[in-house]
Length: 296
Image (cartoon, rainbow, N blue to C red; front, side, top):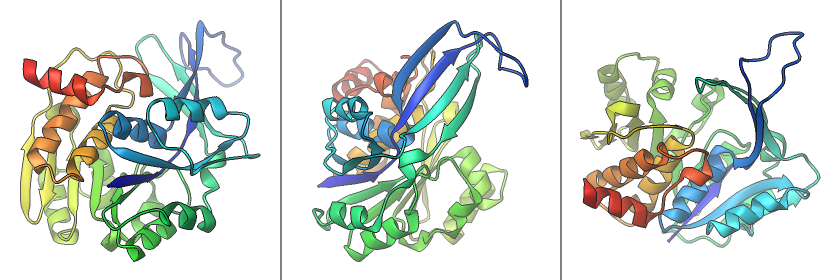
């Protein structure tokens, strides 16, 4: 059983600054780092560290193969991560001393997924496999339709949330994973109880997970609601916490793990990740998660 993650690979250019740069201002940075990023890449790393077989499907510039190699070293299968001439997706990130950030995102090669790549990648799949999507690449509707034609299950994390998401074929999505803000934008509701009612009425045929930050997570399944509390930890960096949750939940869930147990496992992984700095670097292993849960 495998997961085909049609996801972004971004190069994060991170600058430490005293304050966000103002119009016309030239501002010196006290530190700089270049890191593997992108929601797609983070989720692939989380899946691999959770023990799943994951194929990352996407595009990257041919001069940035060191980032592809990092994914491979994390255990991600990258035969469908193509190298080309288009600049890789990247983010220019300003980070202030109080941990606020401002980000300029360039899609680049992440927007180069073609029908040929979709068909080539899924030609190796079986009906027990899953497709995972976020909203940082192109061709989402085509990927969903092709996956369902082949009998695969589809999980979708509509981040970053945009109005175009509402036009996707939601009736073909098996698992929808949103945070509270994305849920509000998708449903038009502001209260959690109203959001839950909306999903139960409009999306009753699919499983829906709503992550609630420090308040934990709830999962809607056939009219039933499962709530799991977040673990209390001393957080230092919340980067990739949501991506870690998604990877660890899906890795458990596709193997018929009970929903509540899969949610607890994912919450634990997410809690560990926020105690570490960075994105992919902060994602724990399944062994780390099991040790954390034993202590709790």
